[in-house]
Image (cartoon, rainbow, N blue to C red; front, top):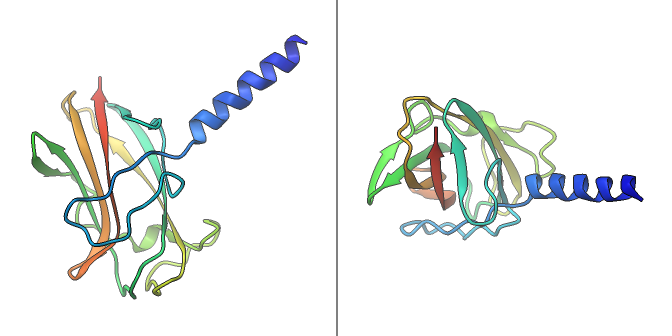
Length: 159
């Protein structure tokens, strides 16, 4: 009986770690709002991401662009007191090396075709120089004409 209880607890812990992240649409984006089953960030339960300095977090996002995209650029910012601050090393970089097919198994890169489903997979370092602060994370993928996908989520950087 104890083994069954331990297995149930382990299963619940694994499901909790792999659970989707509850995200909000970006206020200025015209991209389709992403649902909680389309974005998963490690250490981000339903309500707030807890990001520990000197660690790494991973993200998986389903993308279904409404138009073709020849290239995708990352728009990754931390918003503190309504001031957007670009994440060094990630903001403005190409997202194409992180684009996979719908299953997330085969790397396909760019271009992206309208109506097709893709998986974006990446990881990001929480640098030791980041302040311990509550913030909003803005994660957009797009080009000069607009976003293919964009979401925001509350987060806290901890020591």
